[in-house]
Length: 124
Length: 257
Image (cartoon, rainbow over all chains, first blue to last red; front, top):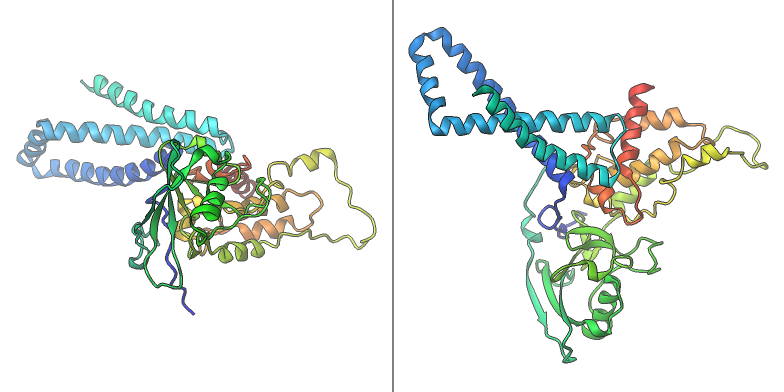
């Protein structure tokens, strides 16, 4: 007999905390990064088509919207790198105490913004 | 499969409002998930005004007060009221825990009470945990030893005994497993934190002779590796245990064996 009872609410009601936020952001930035890398590859390949197609991307990236995208991607790569380091350390069996996960999670979030600013200043 | 939205028959509707009749000045609103299998209607959230001047300190006391004084039709599991049996596990204020050990003073604003997440509801706050216990059975949570002598005790060193600390205290309340998003999306295959913690408990037991077989059985893409260290489990555990760490240890054992 199929169970037609209702399913109790889950993600709709569950409270977020730092570790779960970092975990879901890690996934989202991972997907974004894969798309970004593909687009970067297309951009590089467009060099082969000559100057005009390169000019097009250059104009696009120098527009405000383009700059916003670049900064956004810088953040998503920074976040991914730091969060991945956190996960690698956890895979070694360290940092599982609730307090530690909170601290490392916060460090990832704050660190990702600091890294974004550093990369921005370096590339300026 | 990941299904973010609730199915049509599970959408929660606004329920009844029970106004306070005691005339107390110290009133708190308590929102409780209700579902009655006999009506065929969707679940709803009822709101109760509770007189907090005459209510002991825990969330379970609030529920008892509602059941005894306001609405006897409210259904929930409870037994020991001392955080030992694990019956009154539920979702309070967006976090799983035991109603008998959770002080309502820790909750700000209205008190929201739901059943444990992503379970088939049997009635009101009672979720169906049969799948959960079937998985527990699947790891064969009993001692397996090759020693023929059954009349003498199997000696364990203090150091070996210490390995079980943080694992044997588990009361199987299912707070951790039902807090885990991976368990929500893959609960039919992924064993979930509570069962994996118990798998770990038998694997590290020095008296058990089937360590290798146990490890091999748990080493599965879906059974074990769906854990992505989201840490909801450790966050939810009312006994302060760390299932996430036990799962990491299992992964480590498999990587190094």
